[in-house]
Amino acid sequence: MDTSSSIVTGAGLADAVRKSRLPARLDVVQSATGLVLALFMWGHMFFVSSILLGKDAMWTITKMFEGYFIFGRAYPGIVSVVVAVIVLLLVVHAALAVRKFPINYRQLRTYRGHMKLMRHEDTTLWYWQFVTGFALFFLAAPHLFQMLTQPGLIGPYESSDRVWSYHWWPLYLLLLFAVEVHGGVGLYRLAVKWGWFAGSNPDATRRRLKALKWALTVFFLALGLATLAAYIRIGIEHADRVGERYVPASVQPGAVK
Ligand code: HEM
Image: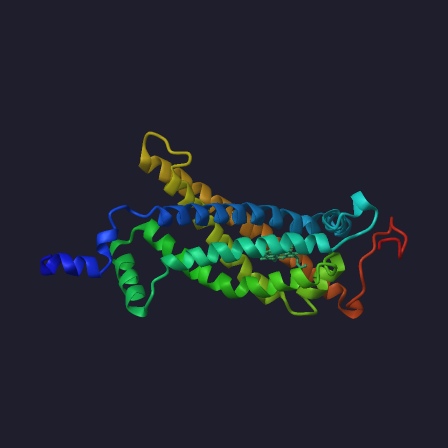
């Protein structure tokens, strides 16, 4: 055996004849978890924004998720199960995303250098997806832990008290911007990566996808801000009765177990 082939064997490269499919499979799992989380977020924003239709509307949605209209009494534990599934998806998604992060400061600087030099919008979008993804590690955790451990404290007064009297609104504001930018860019990149909605002219397809991405981001940001403002308003009004649970006028006090 000559010296060069023994170096190859020593480095383990002799076994590397067959290329591993693992990175491609991990990419599919990362995309799939991202897609499910983005779809969940759309649903979440609509359900949470039911407060814009009034306190009774939000109460009804909350009780629906607690199984009240099926079992005749509320089981907040059902909400905890949903939260646990979301946490699992988030952990898998984040663990796989870390593979793509710059591993040291020099790599990050090189990336930013390329970004400034090229002024290529998709490269800049990736950077914002990285920054907001990193922020979400920290911002999503308190909210999810709260929802997991106290699912029974969701409702028109309960949520508004949390947002205002228990000072959660700054976290929600940051979370809203981080998740909408991250999800919007993520969905756009998924569509480009897997060729969804691809037409005969790739440039035109990208332009259309980008317009759709911005429209969705602006729509969900506006909806989220209006929703947050509604919880803040109710929270301020309810500040002197903080802790009181909401019961619709149509329901006898004490009837909801
Ligand atoms: C990826 C995970 C999640 C993110 C990024 C997220 C983000 C947010 C944001 C930004 C708000 C503020 C509402 C607004 O600005 O319009 C909010 C509120 C809310 N979220 Fe989530 N959420 C997540 C998961 C969940 C889950 C799993 C549940 C429960 C099943 C949940 C239930 C709620 C509720 C009830 C509110 C209303 C305020 C409150 O009760 O504290 N969220 N969420």
